[in-house]
Amino acid sequence: MAPLPDLTQFLADTANVSVLITDASGRIVWANAGFRRISGYSLRSIRGRKPGEILQGPDTDPDCVRFMSERIRSGLGFDREVLNYNSSGEPYWVNLEVTPIKDDAGELTHFIGVQHDVTRHKLAKAEIESHERLSDELRKSQAFLQSALDSLSAHIAILDENGTIISVNQAWRDFGAGSSNGEVIETIGVNYLDVCERSSRSPDAPEAALMARGITEVLQKKRKNFYLQYPCHAPSDERWFQARVARFSVGDEDRLVISHENITEAKIAERRLREHLERLSHVQRLETMGEMSAALAHELNQPLSAVANYTSGCVRRMKVGGSVTSEVLEAMQHALDEANRAAEIIRRMRRFSRNAELQREPRCVNNIVEEAIGLVGEDTRRRSIRIEPRLGRDLPVVLADAIHLQQVLINLVRNAADAMDSVPESERTVRIATDSPDAHRVEIRVTDRGPGIADEAFEHLFDPFTTTKTHGMGLGLAICRSIIEAHHGRIWAETNLDDSGQTTGSTFGIVLPAATMHVDPEADASKESASPGRLRDPAS
Image 1 (cartoon, rainbow, N blue to C red):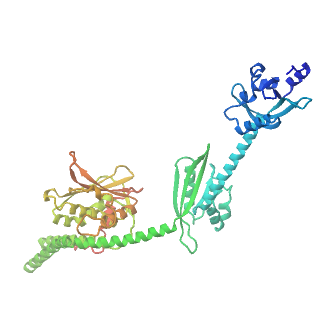
Image 2: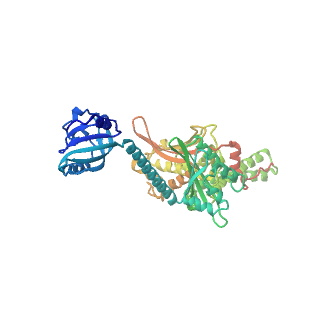
């Protein structure tokens, strides 16, 4: 191709486009300054080469290359958006317009390609499309999340870091619409802390203040989550809910999710289970009394025989002497002491066998242990078993039902006694120890010197109807666990080993949470000993 006139070349070089001229076979014969600038190639390095040899790269569209090749072979022009690569391998986008050039005879002589750099436009368009795609995905994600929340039966709200409601599910809206102040509860944009604080002023909603405090502590990161069970009774229905508050993060911002789940059925089932436990527990106590009846009869026989002997001696002396001497008064005092001892045994039996609901009151654990030892003492003595109490000092008090805890201890002591039937009498010892690892817990441990617990028995040890004895129904330990769990405690068992790995017996441990108040052990003991059947001192 002949060189362009100077004016034509000047115009081509100064145009804000890149121009490439090829011969009829598609080989480069000339490129303007715009093309050389955008591609990074000099005219000398590309003359005689085809554009595809220098402008294609890893992401070149093969369909686009095929289309352009077919058009060039056919001598036809085209207009197409094309991805090119410069001499450094960096991609850029152009809008390529190719025009065939023919001579006067109509023969194809050249192709002129004019390229407009559309890289910025392309990138901006891609960014917009990406933003729209992300926005669409976000909308879909939010819609999915909302649908998932709406499918849950719990009433759920999302709060921002100030406690303001920013989203609720359908169950929340439905519950709000059915309540007297539903409009306030439901409205997005309302501060839920303010709602709780206003509700706390009502005597009918004492839990609202607890809820507000729990939410505040989670917001302030003093705790990770918060749980609260509370009644919300309708005029004709009993209703219970459990509130859960948890914190999560969205980027640098904290969010709170609050759920109120209806647990009425679980509460009713829990109450029925507790009533069933109390009936079953009472039956078991009666069964225990029946099994210990021979020992109790023997224990009662001693003081009653002493009363008979003392009173007979008094009658004989008074018949002979005709007056009340100091010896007679002393004998009568002994008789009174023995009668009170018999009354104390009967009182224990009556209290232990009575049918009463579980009532947790501040109690001294050591007093409960001593009372249980008194009930089971004669039965263990007849079986040549020694009970060694090792009671800790200055223990925290616990909220406990003394009768039910005595039942647990008696069960564990009698199980320990049964486990030592094959142990020599000189070694039959049951140790009952109390301790307080810290100010928040009290531990009770019942240890025997029997053969221990088989490994395969541990998994189902506390399950109902599980027993290793030839007699009994296997309910004792299941009832023990139910009673301890009703006290918010824990019971476990372990086999004791000596330094050589030999079994030396088993230990049943109980952990009870400490109460937050102080109880005078003497006052607690006097509460247990008060009985309308106690005899009066004749001198009083």
